[in-house]
Length: 283
Image (cartoon, rainbow, N blue to C red):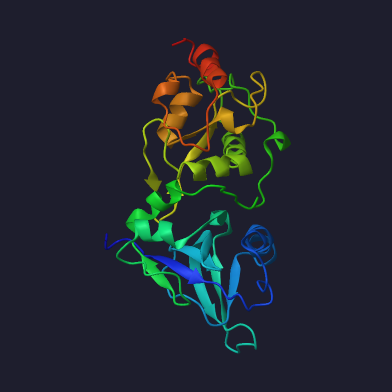
């Protein structure tokens, strides 16, 4: 294990807590992880007995009824000075990292971490972070909460021809709008599907806080004059370098050389449009 890595933690959730009692996996995912935790509790996960001691940036896998049903990045732990009858403290999670997926059983966990995982229990388990990307690649049914992010149609996209010719003062607001649009719910979902790995060069960027960074690019640009669709088939996940090259039409795209996953397919029409209208030539 890389000494600089923080072990992943499996956190058993209390099935006796009122908010989880008699709930199915899907109910806990939709009612708690996609709604209550990010919006009502602003990332605060209150605990009674089961908790963790971990560094900021640690990835936590939530265990409920012998399945892993969600994950999020840990920020800090706060112990209550005067614990109440139900909770002794709170774990804080980055609400922008919360995601749920089709429940994962012990077989998959054991196949990835055979030396560290001995089965689900009520004790927290540490797993080697080096294999997190392997785990994420096998996830299906990914969903994330929409955290204060406008839909693409809520903001007018700058026209593609609005590239600074050298005689204008660059406008920071245009770049800001671009980044907001590419961080829509759909874009964030697509980035998760690809584990934030560039579909052109396969590069993955890890920030100092251990979060992965990537950018979502609409192959046929949104807004005038292109009016591209805000659909998964028109989105490609890129590193910042490849994103700039695509924005400026400095590279053409070849569908056969783009990294694909089962849950995300790029349309041939979008690729052809980019090569003819943006890059200016056709493969």
